[in-house]
Amino acid sequence: MIFMKIICVGRNYADHAKELKNEVPTEPVIFMKPKSALLPQGKALYYPEFTEDLHYECELVVKITGNGKYIQEKFAHKYYGEVSLGIDFTARDLQDKQKKKGLPWEIAKAFDGSAVVGNFVPITSETDVHNIAFVLYKNGEMVQKGHTRDMIFSVDKIIAYVSKFFTLNIGDLIFTGTPAGVGPVLPGDKLEGYMQGNKVLEVEVK
Image (cartoon, rainbow, N blue to C red; front, side, top):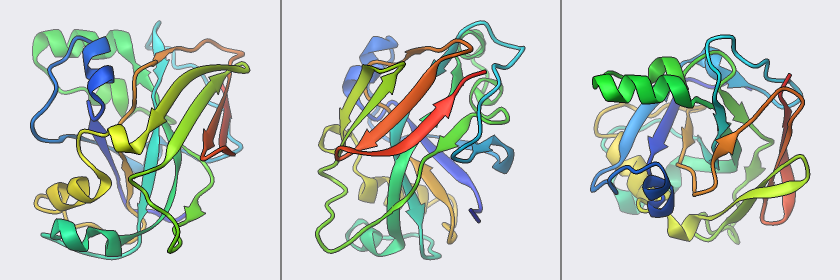
């Protein structure tokens, strides 16, 4: 997979913001992950030694297929062509420490292997990215259930907002935020993501 950068949206589902006792945002909360964060399909995530509370966060991922800056919301759909599911792995204990100090989250969110990406599905004329259901299973038990219609900021709004600050490039990935139900993983756990009933993501924690 060739890609440029990973752009992530935090707190994009009201129920998730509330479960972490965060305010519901009035503008998208944006953070980035480096290329080394990408964990392609078929690769296992090795539990990092610097955390004791690693959490999964499953979310829709959009792949950018056109270069653009200052993209208007009404034209945003022209700049992406594939979607999948991803997991934004988070060292929750590190994140909590950083937040208490008012410091950036990158060490908790952007470490190597922290961005799992499933198999991408092409967007067709029948695809409505604002009407996609997805679920995440941990060891066969459903732990997260989300729907893109419940996003605070739609995919098109996110693209319009982000492109004011960063030029979007072909191959960029946008993680669009996670619904409620995030939780811890341990070595030996297996995560599986389904989008519209089809399995697109699988990752084991070792």
